[in-house]
Amino acid sequence: MDLHNSPSITMWQRWATGASESQFNALAGALGGLTSGIVTCPLDVIKTKLQAQGGFMTIAKGRHVSHHKVYEGLTGTAGVIWKDEGIRGLYRGLGPIILGYLPTWAVWFTVYNKSKVFLAEKDLVQNQNLINFWSSIVAGASSTIVTNPIWVIKTRLMSQSSTGQGGPVSAFPSPGSTPTSRPSINSPWHYNSTLDAARKMYSSEGILSFYSGLSPALLGLTHVAVQFPVYEYLRTKFTGQGMGEIGKDESEKHHWMGLLSASVLSKILASSATYPHEVIRTRLQTQRRPAAGVEYFPRTDSAGDPKHAAGAKTTVPAPKYRGVLMTFRTILAEEGWRAFYAGMGVNMMRAVPAATVTMMTYEFVMQNLHAAKAEGRRKISGQTGANEREP
Figure: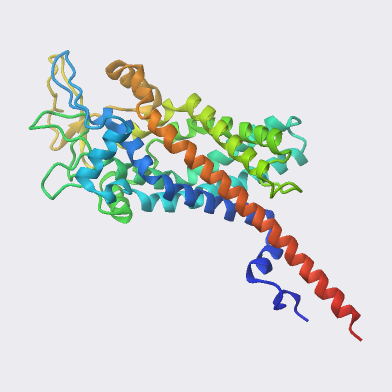
């Protein structure tokens, strides 16, 4: 008799019985990321607008710099987006979020848990906190490299605004003919969808455009290196079990309160410590690369006027941001240290709920998967016993 086809076993239990722990982690992680992405997408759009704003500000000639801010704070930015673009503006970039969070967290949780097992079995690291630290670094690097193109597209979709043909297409258009910090190249920066953005980026800027901001994104591994070891430490203190583990008290109220507290506290600590790298990454991701055949010229000459390359048929201003260190120095010189925390309040209001939803969904799915596996095995064992008693 085929035990797995027994009518007493549900499809969910049948799959869970034969699934591995890696499959559990991939599924739970994907569902956790997907849920948090949908719930917090509007706050992600607002945060991205605030982070990118300095890169689009009008720059006046001479020594004086004119900063014309379009977006101010959470409610102010939400109001501008709602007025100009409606509900669709608040969910701009949802497609890449869904496409991004599914593989990001599926890869992250799978690699993270496998790395912990590998480091422990090989006895490469003795301290559990260090095991969690290095595992989070490896998992973060893996998921970042795999999904960076998706996040570049998401950032560009979120930072642009919806305008008519022939009108301004930049997220922060400057009036008249005043030059802006964004280089002007052959075609307007306006993407209609995820696929449209990918096609236009590849045709006009090349494959490297999909890896804009990869360096600060990898630098952002410091974020997960703080968040998840702290989460595991606090989860163990509050509940007595590690991440994804199931115990006797799993259904008790204090267990879920412990998970909630651990996820909130760990995310607040990690975001506060590593936020500036997100601003740098956003500036690099929203800066376009030149089209093929287009040459750079220095942004200004000694008089402060645009200086064109001699004999060049098509030229554009040299990129404002080049690399992590130069971007850091440029932002600090032009906008001050406060620019590195632009949108941090909104980020906290987005990141903390997002992390909480991700972790709570992950833990909930893992609990149900383990329960389904145990129940499936129990039913199979019971059915086997019944068959053996048959004459």
